[in-house]
Length: 306
Ligand SMILES: [Ca+2]
Ligand SMILES: [Ca+2]
Image 1 (cartoon, rainbow, N blue to C red):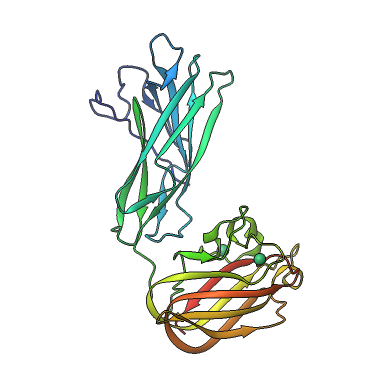
Image 2: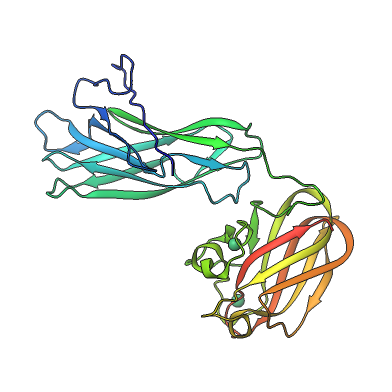
């Protein structure tokens, strides 16, 4: 857990962490993992005689560490606003990041009721960094008229493409369809634990209809000689009842999909498939049936050179 303090910016800022902005703008002593500040916001609309309302901005967690890859799911933040005054307001927030970042939203407009106890309104913000992002400390900002919350983002070196690396880790996943209850990137997030299925697994959206495809785009064409497929296999949901049963593994070689492994009648959770290496830039699993004949559940897809 990290304790993070935020900084308050405004045109009238004169320096220091807790300077006022002509009103009760102040950085809150941050609770563990939460970044927060209060500021006087000029809302889009409110009944306030002064035209401004006190609002607390917050981000949880208050700092992130991500790799510069599109499917690194550690870049997820809950941003929030709390009206601490006695006049309801509509407030617009805008998000900014370095040009090599990708944000799931650029703006957020919300109604902030004035209630006792105060009511916090939250929204998800997903932050990703492309491979062009240099390692180091970066900043994503949440700006409202009257305040600015800075969310520190540390970008690590990109994951490797060496012979001992999982070259699918955090790379861009793709699928024929993805159920709304799961995340496309859950199958390449590095977590193979079926007990974390709801957060870290993925499956299709076409119940009872096959084939389903799940795959990953590699950074570049690489030798591919081993694939590890983890399908759902927990005490509650054993692979023999819920896992994928019949599937092919294919590598895209010079633009053409080439089958490298075929599995039929599987009832285990972890299937390790080694084969003579082929050089390709994408790898996919084509599922023909699952043991419940409904969904193609994949907890993790790993790709190795050997
Ligand atoms: Ca996973
Ligand atoms: Ca399906």
